[in-house]
Amino acid sequence: MFGYMGKLLRINLTDQSVKVEDLDFELAKKYVGGRGLGTKILFDEIDPKIDALSPENKLIFINGPLTGTPTPTGGRYMVVTKSPLSGTIASSNSGGTWGARLKYAGYDGIIVEGKAKNPIYININEDVVELLDAKDLWGKTVGDTTDILKDTKKTNVLTIGPAGEKLSKIAAIMNDKDRAAGRSGVGAVMGSKLLKAIVVTGNLKVSLADPDSVKAYVKDANLKIKENPVTGQGLPAYGTAVLVNVINANGILPTNNFQEGVFANAEDISGETLAEKYLVRKDPCHRCTIGCGRYTKTDKVEGGGPEYETIWAFGADCGVKNLETIIEANWWCNQLGIDTISAGSTLAAAMELKQKGLLDHIDFEGHDLEFGNDDAIVYWTKKLANREGFGDEMADGSYRLCNRYGRADLSMTVKKLEIPAYDPRGVQGHGLNYATSNRGGCHVRGYMISPEILGLPTKLERLDLKDKPFWTKTFQDLTAFIDSIGLCLFTSFALGAAEYADIYNSVVGTKWTADDVLKAGERIYTLEKQFNLAAGILPEEDTLPPRLLIEPMPSGPTEGHVHHLDQLLPEYYDLRGWDSEGIPTAEKLKDLGL
Image (cartoon, rainbow, N blue to C red; front, side, top):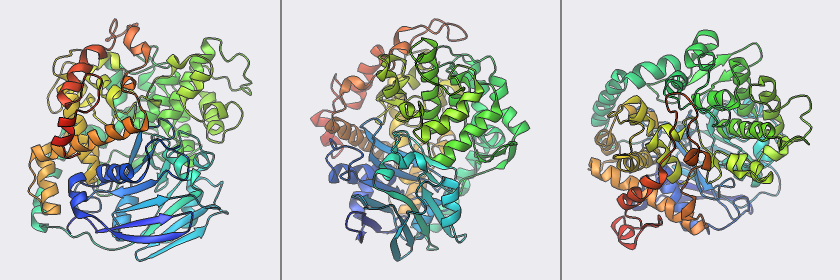
């Protein structure tokens, strides 16, 4: 069995049992690994209608066949569970080294079941798997927990912070201190099981079907990555925050909770400014040849990040131009284990609620949540993560906060998950991706910014509707495959389906084509849709916040535009082989082997 280690760990926290199971290779081949295989296991083993924070939910940590191999960026893993934030399938991706270390310990994945009686952590050292007391770790930050549990260079730590312990529905799972499986509230699921951490030690090797071919394809892929302007120049030099000025120049940098699309102080929070004033070094993930990760330092904090989405969420979306404060807010999110996108977006929603006079009764403790108040974002990030004061009302995301005050329309979410740093009114394909994403408002399920803004692999006019459903579906299907093999999505700036097929074949020993890659991605995407339907997620939830559909952009390069979802959605459904309401047809399910 090449690429795969051939074993899964099944750990039941209720009865403290540990079982090693053989990986079903035929199932793995059909659903690839990572996101695909994790979704299949979850769908087969739970009722999608269960309460996500109940012991009946399962938490699956799962690698792809290319995780831990010499392939470029081969260090990604997925956390698959039912989301407590949205009720949808949750499959959160993370980098760093923890995922590769799990492979080196001999496992393709871990299925965590039940709920412990008291806080525990899992310690895995190849064949030795222990469930150990974590009561002294409960309440500690991500950094402190990692420092306590990491005892060798071949040990990596995954943990939750206080936000996960307190069941914040926007809590993240953190690994290697500052890498996050950030979205959908997966940290709350881990906290609900009283599982504080998973420590992994290992030094095994992943077998390759054709080592010489792997070497050749890796060399070719790395060359294409190096020669690509995004992966070879922009991301290495300025990290993901290179996008701040680019997106702002197109008039789609959401500002003041998506009330505007241009932020006057974008340069102050740009990747260029970050590199000039605060960058210590690049901080790449395992086997990464791109090196977009940043390690920064201010007078107050030092650590990994912030990324573009974080800078936007705490910056332009909150009207804040103080980059030092944004870096500090990011640091606290990493320490407390909270999703930076949802946290910043929830603060921005609260700021608009206050702007409209709906929070006049709230005691803001001298730190008013007002657009542009940089003092407030660090203070309320900590309060949110710890469920203190008004922070308790924000701890479950912007939808529940806004709905509490009768203004759910002010929550910039899809399926209750906060949408990231691109205003759909100015990128029609990307907006369609938001609306149809199976986990809610997510930019990395089909990154249409690549063709609509960056011109990769071809330039699409961002405001046109022509061909956007086709491209959106293609990007979504390809992304599902990339997430399932264990590589980073950023490689897709330079590589296409044919290159992924070649690399996958050389590792696993298959003979897949580019069409096979996209078919596998479509199977995974449709299976996720089936999970959501079974969970009670209504087809009409494939939509965008009303503001983006009916309120024209007030100024800037996108002035006067709204998103035309009503025109794009029927064609998208038809291309997917779904009916007019967005439900996969029997013929399509049969075609995909579902």
